[in-house]
Length: 217
Image (cartoon, rainbow, N blue to C red; front, side):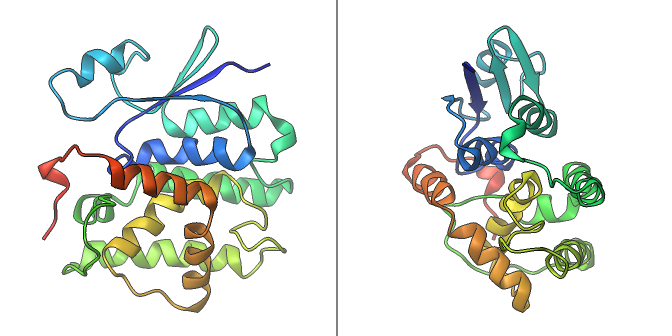
């Protein structure tokens, strides 16, 4: 029996935390959740009690510690092969991993200009060329996958780690009122309709911490 603990940040702000949390929820894998608010005087000390970097998310599995959202998801895929957290087809799996790696290390303009802030009243903001380029690249990746996906409605048919990695982007695009074309809009709606996403959103809206650097006007 797995003894998993996932350490996360504020649900209102922490896009990195959402990814492995959503994977665990969608796969029906039991886990204990520990939430540590970000950017408080004691945040670093609390986080260092769970992982070596003093950052979240962190997964603890007994005496095994895994940090970094992508590494956590890879660990879960290996630990629970029956959950099919990556596509079963080798070529599709390679594409899914490439998209996750791109999301993990790229899209700096989108992240900085459209930070995740679920409690923000949805409204558009000016987008410079760099942000627009990032949005277009996201849509290009989605459309390439959705056009060839089998039944299931997600990027590779059934829900996979790739969908969890783009779930925070779906939230950002909704919060900042970025218009989406047909297939991409339908995909975003399916992500938002997941019961686990509803749970995350409800918890985020119930939080009271405020981080000024995430407020964009």
